[in-house]
Length: 495
Ligand code: ADP
Image (cartoon, rainbow, N blue to C red):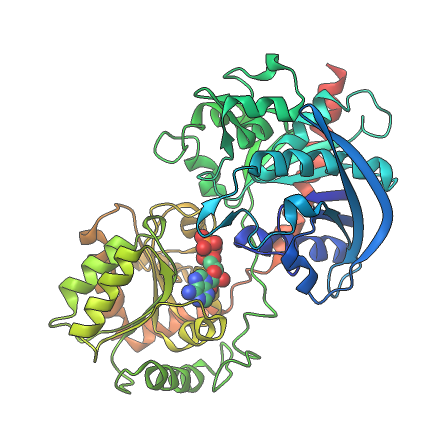
């Protein structure tokens, strides 16, 4: 299978979030399974620091953007450690900037134009590079126009007519909507600007465009694929997704098992496996307590929180439970994250009032994230919604018991420690359904009770540590989805 992965970011060339991790890891796994992936993405200022050689191909191209034409250049690199070509689209006026999509927290005003250009460049690159492609795999709103150009403008051109398209939603909350006049930039006929196709409440919506024109749609967990068809989590696109439910599925992201492995992790004071976690985790816990300034107490439960401190992650619930528990419960907390100013303030208040129980680091620190994953006993993730989530998988790998709200990828990875789950040997954490302080507090209490029962606790740890959340599984599922997508496109062409 020959796949062109079109994305606005991929590790190590550029990153703002999980999209970059997926697009950095999946191609290598596809290649390892004997397939031929290639990646195309913009050449940002930060791409030049990726550590991989980037060379110009001497190929220039011109595409129409509204009433003008814009020139771009193609560059080539490779994915580290894999035989996967990476093509970078250079257009310095668009991409040679400090941030990928925004500066000082404000989106660039020409974001629509920047990604109209990129989407057109993806289609042109196929011709210019003489690529033989079975499937274009588009990701998120930035590449939402790719399936539309393929169906509308490139239809009937021999090199393109067998190419199928897959659109992956990494987070439905980000749709790329722009004012209606930006439709002119796309060069597509106004007839497509209707509420069945590219329009969304009077505005141009690039993600919706991709969802409508792609042959298949997927998202990053099976549960999230269901949830986004409901008004609660559909972000206004539930109708579009319901209409396309026959071609909509979910595939869990994998985790980077080389980077997140307690047996080899260089960030830890002690390494451990599912057989040696008792000593290893105890050493990591003591070192973490020391590092963040909490009393070194081996037997008190240590609860970890890492992530963006925002509404999506259920931080409001965590703050409330901490307020209720810190005065008299013997529990330690370590919070690592950045996000909304209000949450920063609330965590700081809690730390000041209960400095022997609460440690707070309002920063982004990869190494500390590893040490929290290893040193904490439990990991809290009561998200409002969670397309996939990685931290709960890291927690499982590190023998740190996840306490989660059963939504999206959290529901697909965490099996609650009910008596049935424990008896079946499938339980690996604690979960609850209702988004409420009470439900989180009750579930955390259940976890603290289980923490006191070493037999149960150790069973939960070993179950989680022995599970396989690697990309290999997910890559196989993507290959099956690519095959279905090609089949679907062929059938549609015959009808
Ligand atoms: P999302 O992509 O929605 O932010 P995920 O759980 O899928 O949530 O992934 C978050 C990733 O970012 C994880 O790798 C996590 O460890 C990392 N991360 C988030 N905040 C921080 C932080 N303050 N310091 C270090 N790593 C962080």
